[in-house]
Length: 239
Image (tube, rainbow, N blue to C red; front, side, top):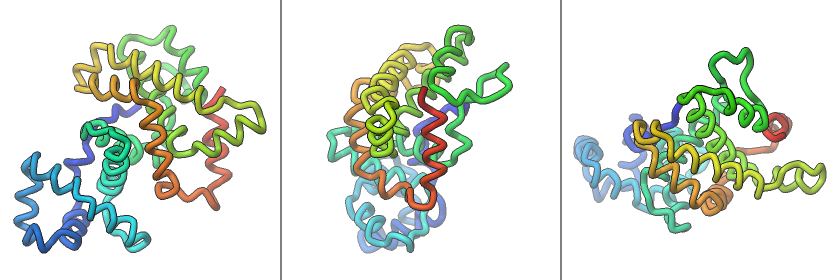
């Protein structure tokens, strides 16, 4: 399991620089000037908070040439601001989570000593009973992340499955994610990874965070031809 860190704001690709210049160039100047501004934390965050970047991302659609880290951060940050989630590191963490979980292989819970990944929440919770200290922390963070990812990106699928087949509903995901983020935030490794405040915030405001992600879920993934793959992903994660 990869430990997610709030790193989107420090992973700029050349395409991201070009995109920012194309949107804000008249105010910023040339590429060298922008690069200097982005190396300063305060000026960088002010630039990334400019609503014009979000509008350009949404208006240009299929013509976009930006990194996934940049794309997710801008969308998540602006949506979170509208939901009164103002902590930049939290937005950065969730954006990084989406960038990682957009790749299916990153959604799997791989535990040392286990022959196969743990694909059910039930199995992950059971694994906590015998896991060592580090693995326990990683599993709890993974459950929190996965609960937020599924309930944030696929809420309608979860609602439909709960109504039609009796599967867990959104309240289940919220309760599970909230409890595991809270337990992880109190762990000694949360301080080592500088995640204590982020995990605590996600625990306390899980529903608000989930609803904010619901607002942009249609822009993150197209379910059309991939509906079967999405259904298999959901089938493997709830029990």
